[in-house]
Length: 167
Image (tube, rainbow, N blue to C red; front, side, top):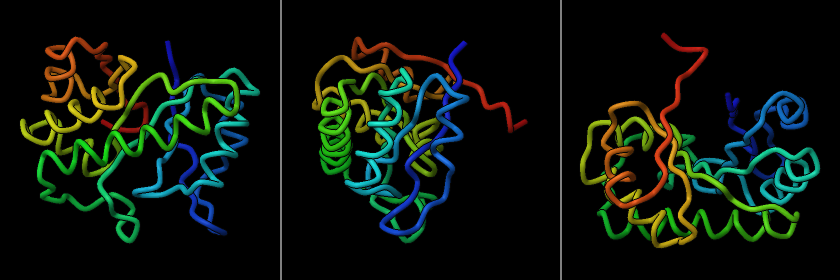
């Protein structure tokens, strides 16, 4: 079993999660990539700490929504969303590799995660962004979601997940 949690959800001087405590408990870290939370310093710090503990690093991509913490559903054109997904993965990849690790999976955050369950176009755009970023990254999502169906159809590893804190 792989236990993942959202990390790096601060920005500048603000922090939301106790990343150090979470890294002691998880096997995979969903690192915010700057669009809903996180910035270059936060991503670097979390990647360094995750790599030091042997915790897998995943890109937690989202809509460009710092003010709403990625919780607002947005109508982003598919080509634009794909580019933004690749951009976020690329940004995190720099810090993961500098820490001696890699980005091994992608997990959308918040409204984007929920939207890709039922929205074919947004799910396809996320997968297009993952493919654009390269590396055959694993995609995490809800069982039966359009996201996982598109990931599988694109030849990407698709992993179903469940939430211990939700019904």
